[in-house]
Length: 471
Image (tube, rainbow, N blue to C red; front, top):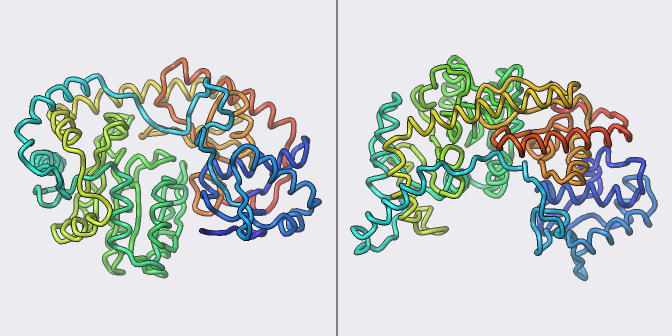
């Protein structure tokens, strides 16, 4: 069980005040921090007196805010342990369980492709030939591993089946690699902003994070990468070099080579998350796999390209690393669901066609979202997303958390910018997926426009912390 000091919580709460009732505004911001995962469940919050003194408000204000959070199920009180953060059992995602019409834009995801059903029916027909086996396999079905290896080879990276491990999605792969390769207390290089669940997996594995800036305009901070690797000698580096989440940037070839060379000299194991690696949207040639340029562990999945409901990912690495991962895996799970592996194997026979259709859908969705944002929210800076599933919009003011709260009141769930930061920065940014149908995108933009107007009625004062992560 972790704990938050009053000073740290106050930093997370920066800009929480508005023209409304103070205790309600404080409760709303703490609730958002819990919903966004920036305050983990079972974290002990500071005592009411300490937080009141840090915020410069009366203890009555904090007491009332904590009481409201307890009533809503976001805090529990345990004698001797203080107030612990939690998610309401009745509804872990929605702030109001009565409302069933909330539109969830916190996920950058696509609905399943039509081919999934036919692939599943074929998998059912193939299943009898595997019934006589145990079903427990930490590395995955040979037929799927061979198909994945063949795809890497075709993309320019010679690969054999024994260099592949099939996992329960990309998140499982990240967590498994982190706890196998790192020791607790080791440093891990990460992009900032980054995929929130990767940051969480590294923290759970005991990593001390070394953040390196990535922006929509400039991409990866070259100096930051060099200094981060040379000065801290991280044991692990987690990167999304292709169609980065959330900025949509792709790392240039020269920079890839430099990063790999730096990591090799310092003994840093690089992980390249290529979950969205083949979702470039501007018609440019897709980059070859990151490991073509030097030693790196690759992670892939079908969660962003086929369907999130197919929990199939994979790791591509040297045989010795795959063997280490297989041994370590047995303490946590005993293998990947067999039927889902067969479904993905069947889909890989026409994966290029699937990708081309997905790119067309996302290209249309991107252009639609940019047009709608330009019409409804012309003051926002919306960079061109060359790939991926999201835009990383600059609001021009440090109010992302306030905007996310206001959007909930308009029926839209969306993650605030700091959700993607290592240190709670990015209050000026918000990630907006363009992977949703036209009607839902229109509803989301309309909700954001109303929320933006409401936030504008109660502007917040800027402080030195407001500029962290500004591009």
